[in-house]
Image (cartoon, rainbow, N blue to C red; front, side, top):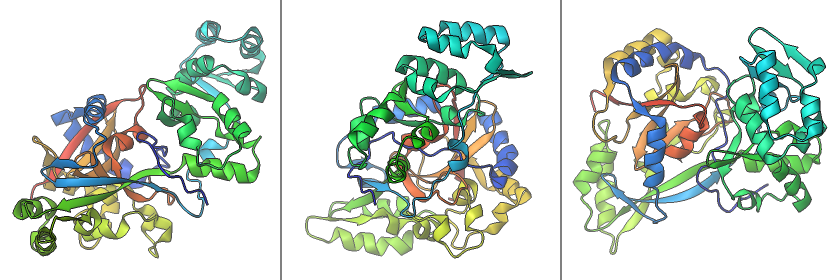
Length: 414
């Protein structure tokens, strides 16, 4: 089994998987919030979290002193969450392009003469009322330069019909070798994969998983998938010393009526000479503590596969999960009556709701501390409950072509 030693920031690689019934049903209620209060621009949040990122081993704030440890989480069963969407024969859909506008676009791309001739051959075009589809030959997919691929895939990314290009695997520029150094893949295969990468804003992208699968041995493809689908999660430790303000720590981490539960352990830790650290998971409410770093498929629970991001976020403080949150009417009523927008700094347990440019709710998660969130990304059973950096989580749902807004919500009784 692949055991990568380190996963860099911004290597989040899962994507919005499947349509969640709960997501669709609570969209209206959340949209009322975003319409009235506006929310924050995702690009602004990303810029702020990047500028505040530090390599220091400790992060200080109202939460105390955090010691984050990168935890490259992978499903040992090798489950491939969005296999149906990724492993399809390449078919490029140029949404809202006409015959003439697509001809102009392809002519403007940095293509070799033979590539341009192949793509401009209208005998291979399927011209519809809302766009044009092209099925590119496999040899052409391999032959594109990085720049030409970037030009074409940027246009394809504007339509969700092009799932691989719309939701590419993204990681930092100049980090390809670091990303795959522990993958176990032969160097010649890594060079092949590198040929299919391209840049998008400040990220290196890879979309052509089906194309690569055709040339890799089964074991090599398994290693590739294991590397791409590692979850950039974190283990958080809270540092407690004799100088720590135990009352303030209990107040921050004990929201939801749990201060008296966690105060004794915090006070005990403060008496250790020189101080010590404890795993933040012990300070989480029961719902989150039990699910953290686990996959739904491992639970002996008939509803586990339905427990999406909305169910997870709204149940965060509940001792026993409220399955009524699978019901749209109940969810709307709770969101409208028990939550309000956060006008100050976010705090432990606040819900972060993400919206696309059309105002549709696409994800919710829970703020923990600093720039870390508790999240369940997608309803797919292969998606675990994890602690992630806010920037990593946002990059799952947004890219330079697809922006949106985020709204921080707080339960009124907290």
